[in-house]
Length: 154
Image 1 (cartoon, one colour):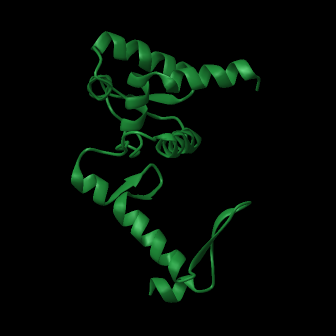
Image 2 (spheres, one colour):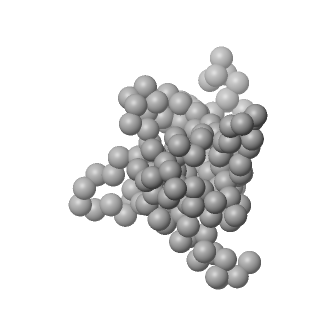
């Protein structure tokens, strides 16, 4: 890996229409180019070019089902990259609040995000488990389950 490769991925993700397309895929679904064009608020032709670049860079994969073509995030690493960028962006916001996540209130309440529970429900569950000592977070390892987890979950 060299700095040019890192800069290339960052530039791809940093373009607002592509960012919107990638974020639209964070729930783990595969979407059509038309659906992603709507998410990015661009024309179908522009979306096609953006999607081609994202597939070429390995951020998305293209799946064919009959005559339909669907795009999805290429790996959990792509989802983690996007989550990290979202967290940094929210911390950096100083003047106006940044609204992240889906516009639909029900999806903000409870949803899955690629491979884990997300939304307000996911945050509440994690906070409760942490408060009860069922999980702990270490800077080096991340999160780990403790012996209290079984009793708390019961």
